Image (cartoon, rainbow, N blue to C red; front, side, top):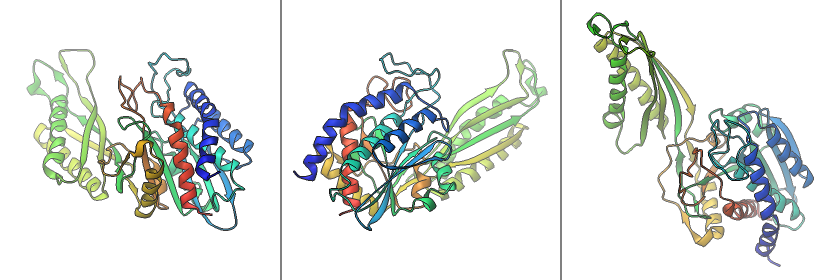
Length: 396
């Protein structure tokens, strides 16, 4: 029997069990660095397979180690485990049982698929499928907290040396079972900013006696868009979004003393991040003068851009072409302005991060939607991708 036939037989056997596991994880979501139940399930599953398990990296992270043959290289396969602070609006049986917390990004599916791949690889470790070491990296806190950075800082790559690292994310809007493998930047940097505007509050009927921080905030919000439309090369994608504007209380006849603005800035190049930060500071200074207010900007660098390295990306593209459902492989999609802390891993060792088609995303079932659910139909493709990647990256 060929490796492919053995793969498929094992995948068919585990598919319903992995789908059930995925739904259990969906029903019991856990927030960043609190994935204790999830981590315990992951570790127990790996240990049952005879895979060496290391717990507690970045609080709740789990790393499994599986070796076969003599010598060979080493690669890391990463899945994220955390959920989002979001109230689920689905009504199916496996909906979240934790109020205000749900798997709205598919990390339940990512975890389940990697466990499925670990199960097949463990079952075939003595059959000359691959030669080398596979590290199964189950990472906490991808959503906003930077669990990947914490794992790196706590010695992930010193303790588990690897030649390349690979990640995968389900992608609503792409056909079920298709794969997108792009070279270069694939996810944006995600910076955050907060702006405090201090004016002089007065009676709303006599605005000339004060300094209107609300008007200044409105002008600032509009002026920030000029950075993207006029100060940034139009061939270089960038986004500045003001997502919070807080000022005043419930009185209609009072101009407040203070306004607070917050938001995010996205770009794919460090030079653009520098230009955005400098430009925002310049605009804040001009608003101070124009509106006779005090403006304080706090700009914080977040996740760096996720950039796919050439060699692992070429390998992933080859693997995707072999296993993609219907042969659908996209290699020319524009990068996403969303962000991913996989960037911290691929900044240390060469990496490739791919998108796995989750279906059309109809009915509001997009990432970070309260109606989202991972599509269990794509589990076999995800498992198959990990298996074929190991076979190609670590040839026997």
